[in-house]
Amino acid sequence: MTTTVELPEALAEATEHQPATRVALAAALAAPSHAYLFTGPRGAGKRAAARALAAELLAGGAPDPDDARRRALAHPSPHPDLVWLDPPGAQYLVEEVRERVISASAYRPFEGERRVFVIAAAEAMAEESQNALLKTLEEPAEFAHLILVSSEPEALLETVRSRCQRVEFAALGAEALESALAEREVAVAGPEREAAARLAAGDLERALFLVSAEGRELRSGAEACVRAARQGELERAPWSAVLVAADAAGKKAGEDVRRVATERAEEAGESEGPSARRRAREAEESARRAARRARTEAIDLALALIGAWLRDLAACADGAPELVLTADRSDELTADAEGVDARRARQAGELVMDTRRRLTVNVSEELALEALMYRVEYLLTKR
Image (tube, rainbow, N blue to C red):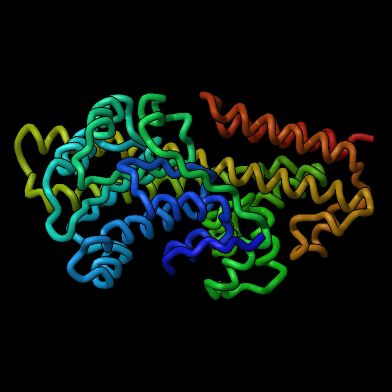
């Protein structure tokens, strides 16, 4: 569906496939609110839209609107009146929210008439940070605008949500994702691009990952797990490759958090004293949380890919190959589907969903994967 709502170029591009959102943002430009909450699934374009809206807000009343807009759209942005926060790990440091948003929002703009504060992944704010932010949301300075971006708004306090004007983003369809991959000139063949768009479940970031070397490896590992179960060869523990990849993802995430924390400490000129030690402790805890979160997300994605392969096996076994998500691997899929009972393949897919749900609590990932694959083996091989 095409919308006739006219928006500035960057904002229009960020919301190309979001007609309802375009209407809301057009209204926001006409009468800007002091607090917004951008919500919707991952990869729906919330961050790009937040940056584009921030650029338009800063351009309004600026001595040179085009230059203000250009600097605000840059990443990282050199505009002094745009403060953009990303969590250093699984959770924001309390002091960072206090210093960079709550305290800073009281100071007048360095240039122009407005200041904009964007808190990406706002659900990563601890309850203490959210409570501290309430007064700023209730009584903002006339020149301050806050944009909270969240894929999990239910993790925010109701008192925070109720003080923000909500802007909803819908999950992108497979065709939109495929177009986005093509527009970014990702060097992959059409069938693989189509499969990544279908497997990404509306998440552009996940689609991009799936066409990367790491994403291809994870896909192959997930398929190898099902293939080993199908052939009764689980003694090789094929799920070990998934755990190794998840460990690597967790380690990288933790290292990234430590690096960012070190850079921020150096920028602040803090290397000694109680404040520096407190920041170091908070940063290390954030690094550990980030590592755990990244590891869990990698395992969850692998399980989603296992479930997708089982779904496609069922579709092939039912004689409906046009319904498969992974059409770029049709030869392997056809071979794996030979002799498969479609009903049992679907039952195996349900076991995968159950395992994904149970991994949200304290369950051993290795034991859960091992138990899952042996149950899948039973369903796929029993006569």
